[in-house]
Amino acid sequence: MWFFSGLVMLYVPYPAWRDAERLTALPRLDADKINVTPGEALAAVNLAWVPTVFRLEMWGDEPVYRIVDFGKPTSVSALDGRLIASVDANAAAERLERVFPDSPVSHARTIQQDQWTVSGLFSPHRPLHLFELADGRGTEIYVSSKTGEIVQNTSRSERIWNWLGSVPHWIYFTVIRSDPPLWRQVIMWTAGPAAIGAVLGIWIGVLRMRLRKRYASGRITPYRGWMRWHHLSGLVGGVFVVTWLVSGWLSVSPLGLIGGLSIGPDDLARYYGAGRPAFAATLPTLRAAVGAHTKELSFSWVEGAPIIIADDGAARRVLAGSGEAADLAEQRLTAAAAVVMPGANIAAVQRLDAPDLYWFSHLAQRPLPALRVMFDDPASTWLMIDLTTGRIVGALAQGDRVYRWLFGFAHQYDLPWLLERPLLRQTLIWLLSMLGMAVSLTGVVLAYRMFRLR
Image (tube, rainbow, N blue to C red):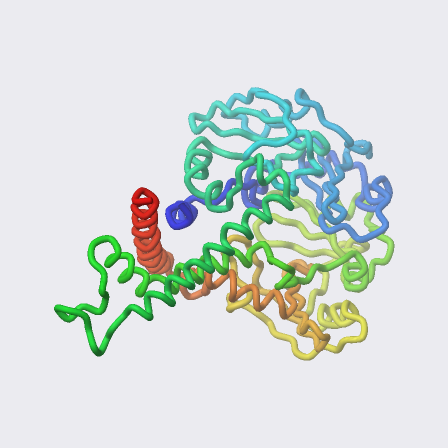
């Protein structure tokens, strides 16, 4: 099951409403309808910390501020300043019709969760309005009842293939995944004992192998039939079976073996120099930042100075106060990063213009060029800063870098040079998966025969 479903996942990932899809679906930002400044939107939300997401986009024919406070989303109308606390199905349908004008939209039902929204990431948006699109692809759209934004979409083919891929591979059945502690225990107590069994099988297989004083007819194995194929496939593919099982087991950090790093509100406040969030920008400056093809404006700070970033194909950055181009020189961003880790010093700084072993795009999109600021703290922390926007876009402690090899490489073969050669990577994974399936299939047949004899 794991090897077959893993091959399916190689081509069809778990459904997600990705940022690229969101930007594609957005209409051009209408500057004439912007009547509320970013500072007024922040004041309406009354945050104690710098938000992790702060942007302005169209919601149907209305501009809205999307503000996320460490997982808690809020929306504020840029038309009249009202706080958008709930969105009913009718309002959501009206907005969706503007996003998908060529495909009739119908409201299917309002749900708490289903197979494709079982993750806790959707909890702040529940309940969810589920809509069906008459596009011939069986597309279903999930809309937040709190903010009105699209949070998930699936197509008929994605749903079918994921029942053969991600769902069995991750043991992602709703009844189990809806209880995170239970799901974690299930992963630990399936992958863990399976890995122990595979290690024992390799040990026995090596003990039974003869390379010098061979068995009759020059054979290296004493077995025949299914047992022979199990022995030989285990000798060749057993190591890969073990590495995949152990890395899958480590994905849920059993027993807290591998700890990662997260950036907290204090860290962001120190980096941005913003303290309690405020954003001084006039309406004329804000409207002037909107170009002919701008779909969203996002907002950030550099050393306390608010900046506006216009996304219209190539990010433009302007100072919120004057509208002049914002300076995001490497030295300035390095100085801002120096205060993030109190008591630690910067050990080195690297500019990345191309992917490397620790910063590359695979399942998650990682921006380039980027600045890597390395500290001499006990965790040997690396901060990753997007040189286009000046934002912190990642943080890697020593545990994260170890996990990158124990899971990322051992489970996904995600070396950048392999990702750049997808056919080679797919061929390698297919060959190793075939070996794994051979070991598994022959083992199942032998186990069935053993039980039948008893």
